[in-house]
Image 1 (cartoon, rainbow, N blue to C red):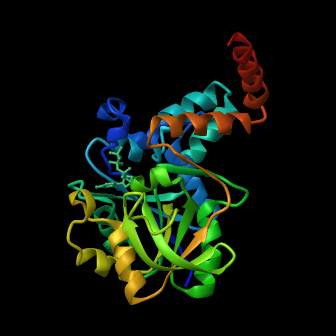
Image 2: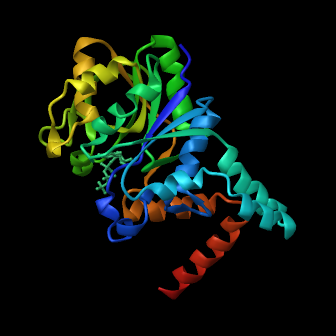
Length: 289
Ligand code: UTP
């Protein structure tokens, strides 16, 4: 069955980015001149997943506004002959069909996904966490669609992480059944390095079947007192089949300051106009040390 809908959970409090997130949603942090949520939506639409369900909460109105049409701004840009900017602004509001659903209490990522139940209905769907942005030849969610089409089962994105950081992720225990594809036996949320079954972490992109909602609905709070998507996947790995694909590309975690910096530096270096200027600047400050 074709994956048509993407759920983007954006209701988290973003404590790692306080005090900025006190007044501004982290989904609007800049990735060059666009907010990071723009890149994530583009990743979904670029992979043919054209219907977006945004999970928002208190203080996130600006994220919804970003995808609205701004007639006044568009008129002003048109009158000023600023066609490039007009294309950019109009493109953001018309790129996609966005429906938003409110998560009224921040009870965890699993709970945020469960809020999309009505909007998704009985069909497979993608989940993209806007904290994670990828630089890859092929959009990350598009890479997951291949194994999903072959197996017709849950597929999640994996990346190897250093042992010292496993406590930040959902970590898998699985068997490699073909190059870079794992059949997952179980998942553990935020394990200590001693308890981690591997170094392979779930990294913010998932293709899930509608059964996920029934499992999430039956879960008790897990790590951190939150309803964890990892716990639902662990249950599904025991009852059905869950696959993991080690994805190709570089990931930046925009939810923390270092990831925000590396993402902007790497995207700027890859940009035709900014790249040479940034390289020259970096060479200059290197000489200063
Ligand atoms: P995080 O674990 O990064 O939590 O959420 P957070 O609150 O956003 O950020 P920190 O850790 O406090 O800095 C992973 C994803 O799940 C969403 C977040 O918006 C983010 O995209 N989320 C998390 C929700 O939508 N609702 C929740 O209750 C929790």
